[in-house]
Image 1: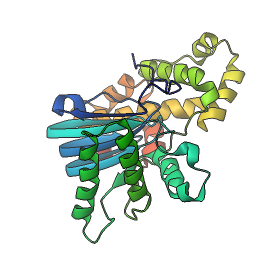
Image 2 (image 1 turned 90 degrees about the vertical axis):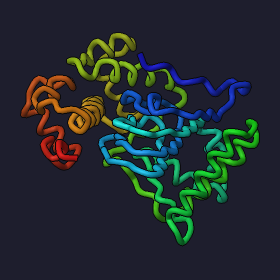
Image 3 (image 1 turned 30 degrees about the vertical axis):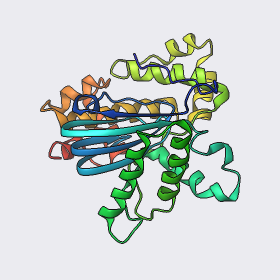
Length: 281
């Protein structure tokens, strides 16, 4: 069961959550949430953001937008600092003013996940150390100081010419007025994507007709329901291809596909390469 996100409408709840993770905690299941996530990883392993898998080593810095599925796995000798923050603490409430235009664009880009190489200075390595220093300081800051430091980090990121979109697909932000309904639908997908998902069952749970639900889902995620499900399935299949020695056919059926040919077709459409290409990563 994927936990429901925190409700930031309560002003007594801190809008920025920061934690240190050990190797066991970093190797988390493929998941999503409604907060932005800034992750600083030290060590070696692999990460899956949306539909993109990549090996990491050294210092890895990633900004994930709202609702993009992600995980790190096969991590060894690693530790991390993760920061979860609400749209409000990221500056969304002030994004209409000119001074915030860069951060507004940054947060929009993060729907596909963003990787930072630290090119805010002449040396990429030095740039990453600047980010790391700010993030590590936040561990010892009070809530107000964290808000100020996060704003500085996001400003640096918005000015970083070396940032790169990670996933080939985006996972758009949700309408706040339909937060509960969308959260229910997304949790249903993540709890059942390995099965034969029933859009009729989900529509019934949400007390909507199938056409009404499909319209609702497309309006608030910018994706057709079937496309979203396929992207989640292929993302998880990509992880299994890289992380395990299971056969492609076995993975196809374990990720909700009843036909190997359909799995191969959808996989190539989303990842731009057949499943066999990921067995050697």
